[in-house]
Length: 567
Ligand code: ZN
Image (cartoon, rainbow, N blue to C red; front, side):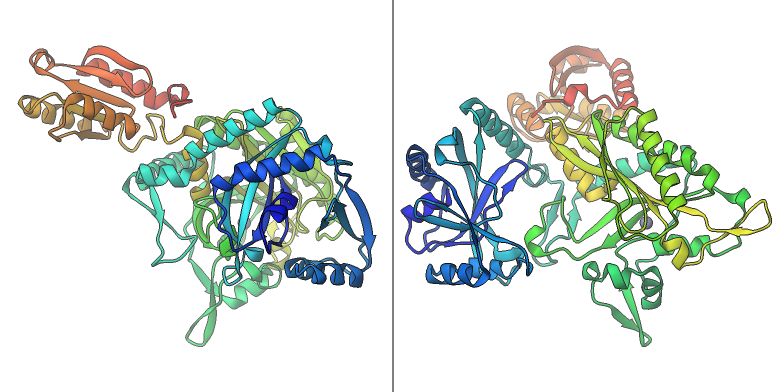
């Protein structure tokens, strides 16, 4: 593609063009503003290059040789990228016809091996993701072994676009990011906030049921706290500049852990007090480059569904198992049933004793095995302070999202000198586990919007029922019906517009309202309603009690089947 773009346009400056999980892209700097109309001629040129069956030639070059090569071609991004390659690493370029690119490889042998491809989209992208750098043009594409494979992929991409949470968030008025406030900072609008409050309410109830206590902690803390925790050392790049209060530096929290630890330390703990399971919907702020911010998925301020478990060595195995079971239960209730895991083990540089690493890692593995969760071992992929499990969930269109984390920590208990009094009369260090199930409410909500394509199941829908009177004459009965349903704790709206009933139904359908109640003269007289479901259509005439019973059951079961594929 890059070779084709260079053949077709003058003065193209190339940055990088990696493959991704779902295809590939290339970042170009060129004066012509690329648009989808440019794709067919680029694709035709690409087809010509494929037909020419050119070999890809791998060349090892010295640093100065590579530098003068790209300088002579005026490719200054390449010259800058060259400087990123560590000293001593072999530098390779690939030649394909007249096109030369800096690339680690490997490549196909010849262009003729490329069977099917398609360009998908073009978007602005700051050089190196930094907003003060030049804006490049990123062209996305896919390649496949067969045309059918490419076609199916295009279909999946189109389905994903339809479900994009940024698009649906706007259409359904769920959330926004405001320029006047700043990038990566989320505003929850009433409908989005309503869903969030239902999620939070459910989350709290499930935590109390599972033996957790809830905490609330401050949003800022003295620099000394973050020095002790080590965050000012290994995490400072993600922390915002401090503010000064009474001549002391305070940092906005990027994590909740040090505060929970303070509560642990607020009194002497005995083995009889453990395990302690403490959860908080804790809002944290972390620096992310502007270029990587993405709707609700990558943000600068978010609320973690955080928890810390403090326990004895004897309790570790059971606590991990309980946590994994808890995670599965929560995911299933939101309609996610396909879950896989990564188990990350001890890296070369690590703190904590070998015994603790071994016990913690084994307990994570046993929990995954006993719950029959397929997992991949990520040997040496753990953080320096402990092994962890990452859980990935598959959404309605088969995309995997990494959401839950269960992470041991041998570092913070040491740094903060945590202890409990054992039954042997001695002080011991407790095991500490960080755990987030949904991850963050922002990211979880983004995934949820895409999973349901904005058509939330009844228990989550911000507006569950809309009452549609056929004419003005039913206004009074409609008002009474709305009040009756509100009295039963349903979220109801009465459509008071002067539109015809067909238009009212269309609007409710567009707003993805689970149930529409149509009220005409006959229904008003008989004390019934015509019930219409967003997915199943006309359900016939019902009396209020029958309707209430049906809705109650659907809410209680958290049924999601009816909203699958409701896009
Ligand atoms: Zn933590």
